[in-house]
Figure 1 (tube, rainbow, N blue to C red):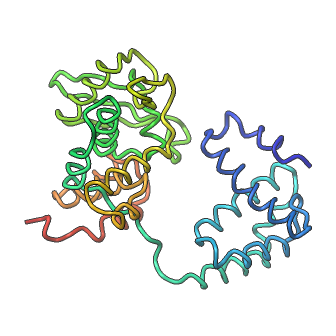
Figure 2 (spheres, one colour):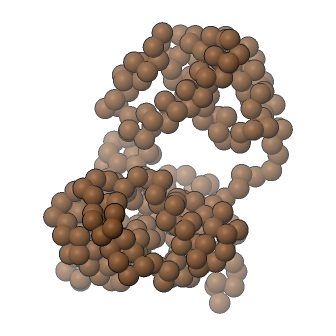
Figure 3 (tube, helix red, strand yellow):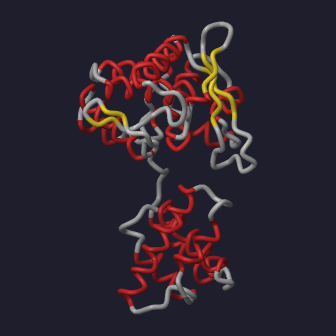
Length: 293
């Protein structure tokens, strides 16, 4: 059975990012099955359990769970039973979870102070201006990296007070596609206006690839967000600090900064489009108490 064809049924119902994740994760499972001479679709519960047991030492538990979601989705698309819910598989998942004790490692938050240091490392050319906009907008809007690179020029609106607001469109937890409004500081508004003028943007993606001062007419890849933040962190701090930075660091750091400034969890949840208070609580639990002083 051609599972690639099955994934096409998801087009329009799921985001391109989600479909790519399903494709990548199931391909990992299918390749493993091929090497073991086992059938991937439909797979036996014992096969899935072996896959889980065999990856406890090489994959994070969160990665194992994500790949099982893809296995389950492909089986459902093909009309087979949801084997990920089989008792043998569930026991393997419990073994995997118990084999990796401890709390998941959190991305290093790029707080306001770190944001300023990273922006100071940006070059003075178009690429550097784009990177400053990426950091400033990402911080102010608390966007996920996928939301950040999806922002369009026409999503930005100038308010009577002289600052901008931006429509953050559909997020992974916004299945109705209503989006949310985010607000920019005066400094970030000025950067966005400078970038739009310098890049001569009329519509379409705000953040775009820059090659030798030539701007490509396409969206920036979400992976570039982490690459930019890591590169600038190496310059502003050191290699070890950069290793802790991810594409999620602006979102985490902005939440931590708001907490340090006395903003409550509910307003932070609203600003970042969170629906789970537990997620935000994890981000801000280690806020340095000295920031309150």
